[in-house]
Length: 273
Image (cartoon, rainbow, N blue to C red; front, side, top):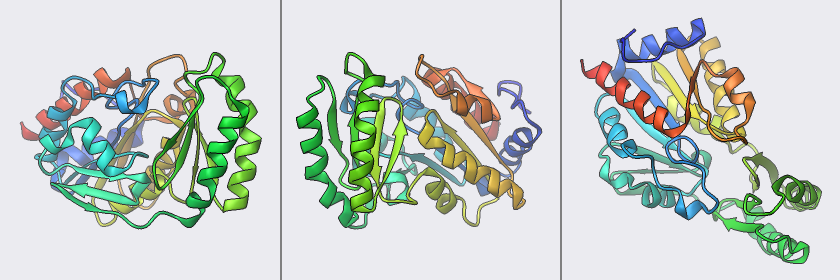
């Protein structure tokens, strides 16, 4: 293992990282955006990448077979807010695997009809409940209710949970919790779905995330390892609301976006050495 790289705490994680280093041309590294490459902020449009993140991604995209940012955001939104057009060869996967963007080319399906049906109901619910700070982010393929700006985010989410679940059931969607958010999206579309699509036919895979929505990606890595494909998981852990589940399950724990950037930079350097 390269001296500048942190050592995963599990045997499976060490094997996964070693496999990436041994044959980078057949490796996939996928990284979440919000909370992983960029600090968590109250307003998603304000989430700028950590200093050095785009440069680290560009270096990694040039060093391995596939480097991807995997986000619940739309791909074009992620590209714009992250400045990823400056990283040639970087694949940006939006809406949990439904969209993909690389070097200016976007592939995107039509949104699920259930999201269109749910949209006015979700906006009406938030307006009627009138909890100061709670607002809806429309991702086209999904709807996210943000509670972080509320005076009591946990109480706001508790009050919203059942009404949103009822809307989701009516519209054949699912409600997925995150860091001070509840998201309505089509069932089966998650970061595990994205990782499985990204890694098909590749020799090794790594994933870095920070939130409950990243746990399906961890599940996908573990399933791939059971099938003989080496891989590793890393958790970006920062802030009091960081879910402990990720740190408990990850092969490697990183101290938030600054540490993630250091890790990616060191990984690219180790491959190029």
